Length: 274
Image 1 (cartoon, rainbow, N blue to C red):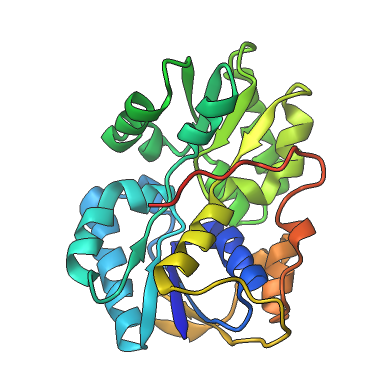
Image 2 (cartoon, one colour):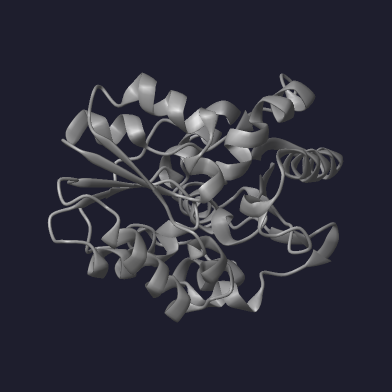
């Protein structure tokens, strides 16, 4: 059974890692878009066109589900994608874990791209699920791009800038971009101690399995991992090897849980996936 994951860059790595951990027998089709990256700085029509084109390719390749492990693409084009694909092929999107953070924390900061931070979708998410908590909207310009390039100096600078703009009263930080879990250790080193991070990658993977009527699998059967880059057959970019989950996926291994959730965090509580 083939599951396609679509993103412009490395934002799909964490969700792919969870799927590889939970159900390694799945055939995974990773659709990257290096020619169009980064999507966060592009127009809504551009992102929608790239997403729909990739989804059509995935369906032609026999994908039984399409996962969008990208907050920007989800808030921009998930409705158009569902209209195109469902009910025959389920579409699973990704949104910031505001609801889960609000259920536990006092005050929340949502770190996200500029597009997601300014989106009406995120505002509705906060209005519907923040339960009256203070929510600081912290845009993180350049962080996703630095992660895609494996530029840890630039990523560290962007993280420091976001930390400076995060109110001291916040005890929870929601990672509102799927790139950010790849640099959790650096984020934790920058933030004050005691802050809990929230991410939705595990929930998105589990929702995908539920939509497919499957459960996690503990055997050692390994499905293939195929990479397509802007419509061309390819492999995971060299930069993905900068991250443990990228190295495990490149080796076609089952991804161990301990590299998906940093031991330095309280296990992030994942939000229900779209």
